[in-house]
Structure formats: structure tokens, C-alpha cells
Image (cartoon, rainbow, N blue to C red; front, side, top):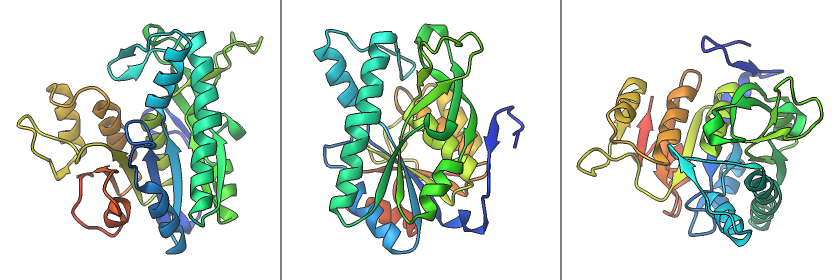
Length: 277
């Protein structure tokens, strides 16, 4: 399927059950530091819902990059990625962090399958901006691998890496591109036609110029918040991902993932965090 934005979304076999899919982005600032999502994800699956996890791991990557003597750099909230940084990011995200999340879900009584965006050609991308290096812009999303895992009753746990589809990549070098996890979650949720998309963060939600929580926003208001400079740094890709996804997703949420049960409250429809529709 080709959207009005020119981004392809391959939805093979998506059925009426898309309405019970909840895409949850975890990691980044909260991963391993009080994130409450693991027991909540298992509880959602036991309730009959079908969670899909997209994870970050920015802090873990930064720690490992520094151990290699590389200083992390960010441009407009996105990690600048040279070849050395990419190798570390792929190893950490697709290996260490992904396996840890799968193990945690299993320890809480759930079933999970670790995936990367390159698996089954799930996420295909082109270089987003030469200034960012090997960071990709997603141009095609194929959800068939995700659906196959969901049909087994397991929770897909997806690391944000994508296939570089540039035609000059025939020799296979730099075939993988780093993808922002927030952006990846937005594309996955939109392609799945998920019921909701939830971002677990380390703040109460989106804040206005006076640092007060904004409980509800429309897509247009969300974009205005970015254009005005009120939303900055890592909040920008989260808001952009919500605004992108809600063309097919009922609502996007940005919540404080450090609060026990926050994800369950959000899915139950309680007032928590910021809702974008």
C-alpha cells in the first residue's frame, strides 16, 4: 500500500484483529532504570491484547560507544552515526538490549521473540541526511514477519535497524542503517493499523512552555509545538511519530514509563500522559 506521503506500507494478511494490537516503544531513557513496561506487557497479553514492542537503548549505546573511545553526537535529537558507531549500535540494540528484553518478558511469564527491523525486510530505508551519517529514513514497512510472530501468541520485540536499499550498495557494505526507535515505532504502528501507540518516557508527557502537562493534542497542535520550538530534543521524534501514526492508529500516547502500571492505565483509557489524535 502506498500512502499519500509516498511511503510504502506492506500489510500482508492484516485482518480484523488489528484492533487488539498495542504498539509500545520502550527503552532509551527508561530502559533498565525503573521502566515498568515488562510486567504490563505480559498482563496485556494475558488480557487478550497483542502487544508489539519496539525498543530503543540510547543510553546503553552511548555507554558502549564511549567505551570504544567514540564521543556520541546528536543532531536535532537524532544520533549521528558513523561506521564505528553503527557497528556498536547494531551489536547493542539487536544483540544485548533485544535479548535482555526477551529474557525479562519470559521471566515474567510471557513469551517473546526478538526481531530486528532487517528481519524479513521489515524496515527498508534510505540515508536520511548525510549530516547524520548512517541514519535511515524508512521508505517501506513490511509487517508480515510481525504478524507471523503474533499468530504464535508471542510478543514481537523489535530492534530499530533497517535495510539500506540504496542501489549503490551492491557490495553489501553499510547495508544496515540506524533508525530512530521512536520513528520505527510510528511506522510499525501505522502499518499494523494498531489500536494505539504508546511511548514510555521518563517525563509525565508533553509539556507546554510553562512546563505543565498537555493532556490532549491534535496532530496539527503537535506539529505546531515542534515548529514553535517548545518541543525539543528527544521529544520531537516521539511527537512526530504519533502525528504520523494516527492516520491509521486511534491515538498515540506519551506517558511516564517509570510509574508502575502506567501502560495498563493508558490502555484502559485512564487519563495519563499526553494523548495525540
